[in-house]
Image 1: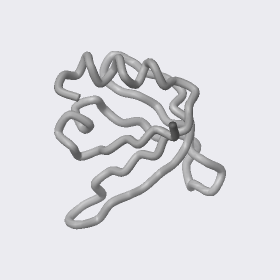
Image 2: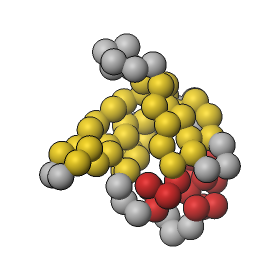
Image 3: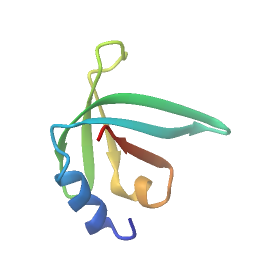
Image 4: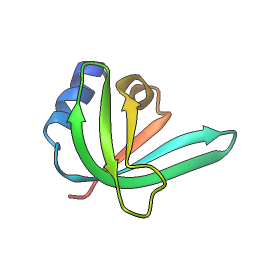
Length: 76
């Protein structure tokens, strides 16, 4: 993925599917969350998290994906 438009297009194709998002949570720390990709917006996307998570939803920006601060794995 090389541009923000390509990232959004790829995510648009997977709305409603199971995803795992790994994000940097600080120095040498990572947060792994699983859930359903619910929606995409012009600058961010929303993941509805599994029941064991503390939060119902989490949002991430396409810029974080582009800069590799967030990694997305699709359950193909």
